[in-house]
Image (cartoon, rainbow, N blue to C red):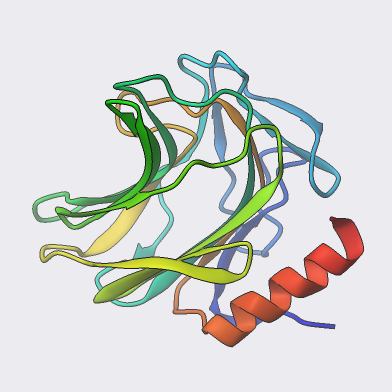
Length: 212
């Protein structure tokens, strides 16, 4: 049985509801009635194929993204972004200093679909067309260099800018004031340290063998 490094887990959101299963009691707030429906494993958060304002949030996460951190999640996109549109998987913001953010979005830029990671003011784009109505898994590893994995395999990397400090505000399925996600999220896990490529790959293979 392949397990995450449990001592580094800050929050576990199975998204059967808004509760944190890590023991750290980092319960989410449900904004504008996100529903919970059949998901990848058990239930998941359903934001909707035409979502305009639904998201989940937490105002005090307590992870220092100026150091090392990671977020792992499963997602199913129900509606692809139109030209000029971006959909936010997550948005993390600081409570101090310049309040720089880390966010991960799926965008359509003049007809070209891209994943975009913005970390401390430094943006990295990766051209890719993601499947619609098919579950996939992302792992985002945050450090001086950030690494994106899709379905257990390395996809792309980007640099983290300066000014990052203790990041406490988290949105799932939304950025600061828009870019709603149109689909489902499941099994969101927050880590207060890095993840290795081996651990990410092994965990995905384990989950795929049982559930895909």
